[in-house]
Length: 80
Image 1: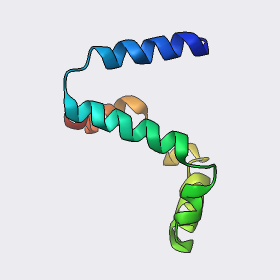
Image 2: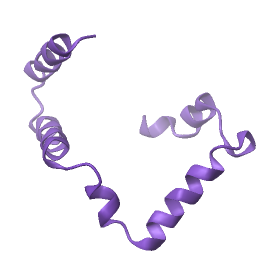
Image 3: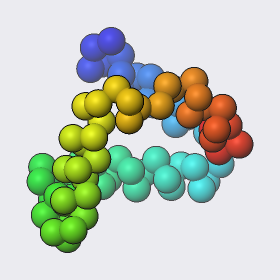
Image 4: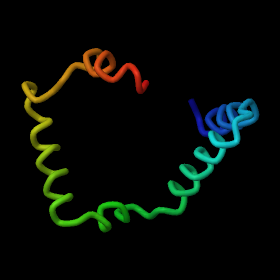
């Protein structure tokens, strides 16, 4: 999908939403993503949060630490 197709699809999605709360959520997500500079989120984290994320990333490299996607979908079905 190219940039023009993506933009058109987003416009189409938005045009078909009548739920004001959902539209506000989209608006805030897009606004935050376009105004946040790379590295801003990382800079806001505490040292402990950064260490936890790095640790989780390293642990994710080991297959025995991973849970299949289908298992996660079943486990969290009520929220999906």
